[in-house]
Image (cartoon, rainbow, N blue to C red; front, side, top):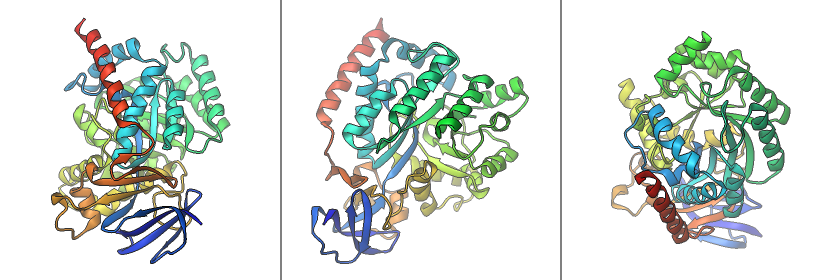
Amino acid sequence: MLDLLIKGAYIPQKGKVLDVGVKDGVIIRVEEGIEEEARYTIKAEGKLLFPSFANMHTHISMSLLRGIGADLPLMDWLQKVIWPLESEFVSPQFVRDGALLGIAEAIKSGTTLLMDMYFFEEEIAKVAKEVGIRVGLGFGILDFPTKVAKTQEEYLARAREFARNLKGEDLVFPVLCPHAPYTCGPDTLRKVKALADEEGLYIHIHVSETLHEFQSIKEQYGKTPVAYLDHLGLLAPNLLMAHVVWTEPFERDLIAHRGAKVLHCPESNLKLGSGIAPVSDYLKRGVHVCLGTDGPASNDNLDMLEEMSTMVKLQKGVTGDPGAIDAPTALKVATQMGFQAVNIKAGLIEPGYEADLILVDTSGLHLQPLYDPIAQLVYSAKSSDIDTVVCKGRVLMEKRELKTIDEEEVKFVAKRWKEKILQKIRN
């Protein structure tokens, strides 16, 4: 008996209407007319079936800070707005409540994998397991005290303990998260690398987000940021680099050669005035590029459809080439390449792949007439068109209704946090 049967969905990557059978979280059949009995059946006639999205860089609990400090450059936004508010409000409860809000939003926009960096990540792990979504987790490691730790030794000890506590979990997995080369010195970065090698972990870090960062790292260490990380031994297949907006051509080849991953966040980079990453050039040079939204306080949403469309249009505009990134490549970057980056066998609708899937409702006026489903997903669709979301065979949303989260309660809690934070800002 199947656990889940999706009947009559049109699969654009196969060009036909097919049924999909799932057992133990894995796709085992993709064919016409499956008659096998299933514990749960979704009738998907008239809908499109795609792999779900992998949001490869975010800070989901910052959903509670969404809309604060708009129109500031990165360092002013961090130093004058975000860090002071975080020092006042960030707590296990803040992180848990923000994670529920962020995860609910992510599911409603078709995402089943999040790569998160923040504080009190054990709270996010609990929420993710309760809800049934995949999250790669690590708390930010910095060279100055925070609510997580006070010294380098304490940060690293807590990171090791956190990683060991999460090992073997089904949907959540530990990641080491040194914040950035400008907040972590070379000794800290070397020790993070050693710990990653010892424990078999990915490293998730912000790199070359702004021109100021690029120039200051070069002045301080005599090397551009990517070359500096390579010098320290970090540039490797387990390195996940968020942003990477400012690079020299030789660095792009170096990233490809070392097998490190770029986590592209175009909308956050635009909103903060950080620049436009040379993503089409990265892809041409063989760099493994994934897509992320960054945190909902700097984007200001977790909408991967919107992010994908922005990525493609930006590259066409800055290169003057309408074929700089085509729609199928954009979809691959937003889905398959994210899962591949952290060795999760998902992102394709094939037997043997884990069932992380979305159904898209094409009845909206903005999708009429439907000629090219992949192109129209990238250029025309909205997150509100996502009807159903499945993560490892578990239905998290069906007919736009969240199945594992009380959406009204999440909204109520968010409003309570708004009142507390507004009172602080006014005072």
